[in-house]
Image 1: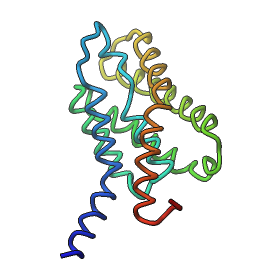
Image 2: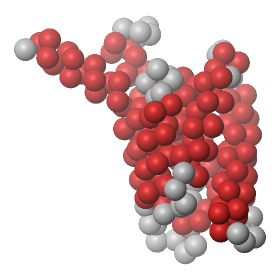
Image 3: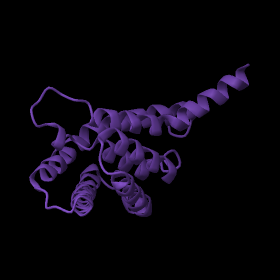
Image 4: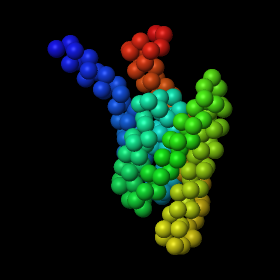
Amino acid sequence: MWGALNRLDSVARNVLPLTLSMVCVVLSEVPFQVPHFGPIAPGFALIAVFYWSVYRPDLLPGSAAFAVGLTLDLIAGTPMGINTLVLLLVHGAAVNQRTFFQGKSFLVIWWAFSLVAIGAGFVIWILTMALHAQLLDPVPVVFQVLLTIAMHPFVTWVFARVQHALLSEQGDVPG
């Protein structure tokens, strides 16, 4: 019985980053009662994929980033594949630069995330214009990127608390 509970606990810990990322997808699309907020809502899923790809890519592999992006495309009603592609690119870049991020201060990582968020916003804007074959106003994208960058410290703080609790329970980090 304890073996089954230990396996269940291990599975729950391993899917927690994906689950939190999916919660971020839903949070990104919650209809707040603020006029015109939808197009500029922060990209919580982008923050989640970046964070877990830097700190625990073993728990958020590329397939999970794909699932998060596809779910975001479905829920947000964006053209299929745009968010999926962008989140896969973010995941790949974060994993590729993971050794650079090790031991760096939060400000360096926030700066790097800011560059990633700007790039992601630009790619989404360009791809959306290409798919719709029309010029789109960049102002909502700019505000969304700025809100995403502004929300990064708060979301990262929550993820760091979860990660510390997750690892300290497994004995991977000192308590």
